[in-house]
Length: 248
Image (cartoon, rainbow, N blue to C red; front, side, top):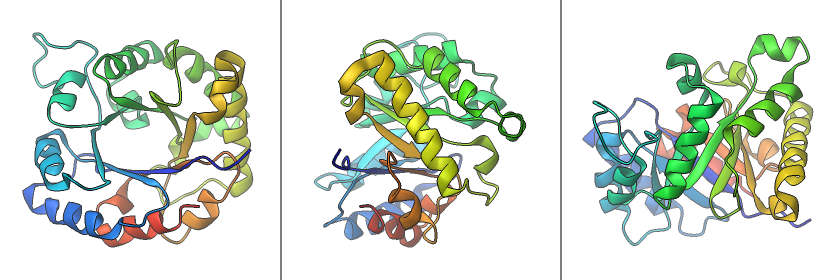
């Protein structure tokens, strides 16, 4: 099967102030001939400004999380509708840091994904195993369980991107081996196909976990790797653009 058009998405996490918008300018200037789709998910405080900055460019802006409800008494939360209203095009749900730091389980992640769809956003849904689960040989079982529990019915290539993030490789400098990444992505593709049929062939599966300019080309060249969800390396435009340039 021909390689899908890849997506390289930057997750700024809890980093960035107005001064950081200069990095948005630099990314916009550098993606004119990008071979892939490019997105940045800044903190919620910067979404509207980043959208304004990026108007007329190919750069998509998104949110890092959303509440399942459209509105209500949920102090400090941001709804998918608010992200869309600010001009966002996508939202990350189920990131391992949300699952670990905030105790988010598959049912909540699923509800957030449904909220993203309700608001017309592309949902980037994260799954991945911990180091202990990997060492005990549970990787495939964990991924299968998270896919079954977190991905709502009705997933298509137009509304869902799956991001495989081995938890032990996020922010640690460690990266899964090429064989490990290829095997995990093949497993995810097979599980999606079992549930969603031939349409699952077009659902993009990103790799996330210490993706850097130095390893991006190898990772992005693997079968069933349809892009990257980039953390720390997305904070500097030069590093992020080097990863974008490695897309195939």
